[in-house]
Amino acid sequence: MSRAFPSAVIENLQPLIDGGRYPVKRIAGEDLVVEADIFKDGHDVVAAVLKWRAVGKRSWRETAMVFVDNDRWRGVCALYDQGTHEYTVEAWTDMFRSWQREFTAKFEGGITSLRSEALEGAALVKAAAGRARDRSDATRLLEFSEQIASRANSQINAIAKSGIDGDLSGSIERHGIHSGRACDGGSSRGLVRRVV
Image (cartoon, rainbow, N blue to C red; front, side, top):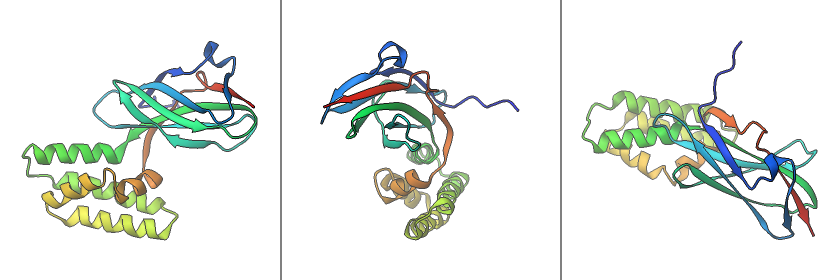
């Protein structure tokens, strides 16, 4: 079976010394600031995380990256353990934020027939509720899903706009769909040696 191409492209990971062959050095208490060019075709919204771990550990720690400008994204992590760490970047299409942006643009553009868009948003939120491990998150997401499916366009637009930085987006980020999740493939994986 052939693999699908990832929807996001990650390039120009920095800091990186000789393609990740040599570790970047940081002293105790100094944050590691990582930047990368992240983009995709189309109009969907991209999201990205910086992942890091001590070499040899199984689990990764991660923090959200923020958009800087053009295609540049930035993430910051703090290394507390002595030794060598590795880091990488993952990016994907943010289905919910893409829906938010599309619904708001159509509503503010004067389009009145938005029933299918409302049902799409409700389905995204309901799917996230199904993945929620926390009962209160699941209940809250199901409430949002029902509101999006049953309210007037102006009310749905208010929910979409308020969800951008509110409870809804936080819950969606924890339990949402990360469509086409792409990793920088390890070719740009960096090493960091924390020095005391």
